[in-house]
Length: 309
Image (cartoon, helix red, strand yellow):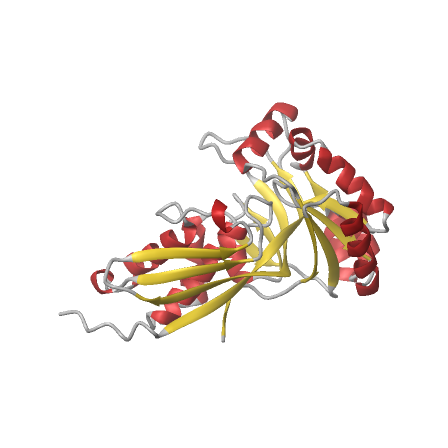
């Protein structure tokens, strides 16, 4: 017989950061529909929070508040629900586990910042703690890879090199703290649509490799050197689908950014500043310019999904 549920007031909360792709090199489309990637992930201080409380066995419900809440599904399509179910099915007495989940969002939806993947990672951490499952970091990463390409990095955080579909991650040797200004787009971009446009614009891409100059820049900790090495193979496709983004990138560089790129599949524009004061000035200038829906400052690298409170 399953043990009785703890009181519903018992719960846990996990915080998880957004990511920027400092480099995103994309190879030719595979037969399974995915593209091989060589990427450098970088976790920044823009956070979602996922709370988990006890629910009746086999009941998994989710609520969402904050940035873009109306765009987030509340059913089995939500990665938080899928993460909780996968964890219960794989490592728990499934017939006695359930969860009431809530997401407080600051990471925009469909923005190239892996907000959905981040929430899935946070749900794994929160539910493992809620259900008192003694799991290794490796066990959690295995589940994360089943959920999606960016979920393992959301667990790890920091700065890391990704390969495969992005799900194979190893920490990168990186020095220093970097100051970023993020310009949110007025409209989201569909990741499949961006990859589809990439295939049209780049019919014969080379095998993906992380540029040596970017890895060298990370080892030096010099933001100007890193800014010059930022690269995203998906950026031409994102700019083609949303031409306004080209103006955003140009404006940020005109206002003093030492590097700029579209993060992931976009449409968020990530601007690297030379220092924290420079980031403050850049954020003020971009906000006044009005090209972005919202402008936020962030720093990185930061740790991945962690329990808080």
